[in-house]
Length: 192
Image 1 (cartoon, helix red, strand yellow):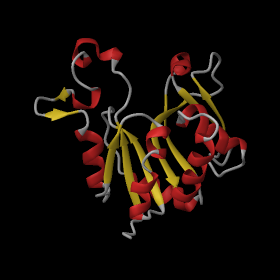
Image 2 (cartoon, one colour):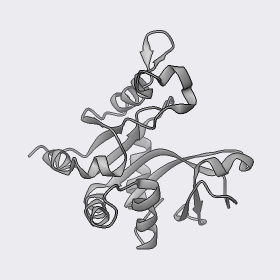
Image 3 (tube, helix red, strand yellow):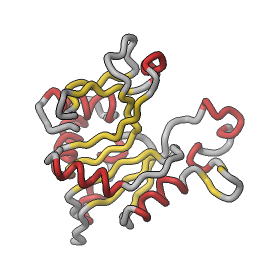
Image 4 (cartoon, helix red, strand yellow):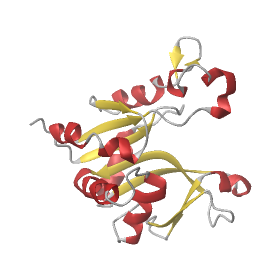
């Protein structure tokens, strides 16, 4: 069995309806960007530049990870990085991993501040004074904060593995924002 500290699972992302004609015949991660690049190249480049060389690319959300438990177990990672394949940004995931370790977190969620007037369009994290996430609201009508999830998660693998198996028995089509993360918060997991 290969032992990796962290592997990445890259999710294909949403339908791309906001990109209109660009995603009529092609998946959003495969859309051209800047002439010779595709959107998928950004998270892949971030992985390589963060020292992550084991990456799986799947469609869906938490359910896709559930169906790949055996694949992930082959690498026996301590941590798993879950990314969206349809976002354009530059990030060093190793910095996020260091925070995850420092906080002894079960899950660390990257957030970005958005204007409060548009926060109702995002998954919003409500935190305490230690940056622990005490509540996750999916597109709330009246947001309590402006910390929007970037769809970038680092999980301690054994905790996520257990949560995926548990949730699959309840929902079948597990979703991080609707099921996994709220359940982790409600069961007192360390969520930052």
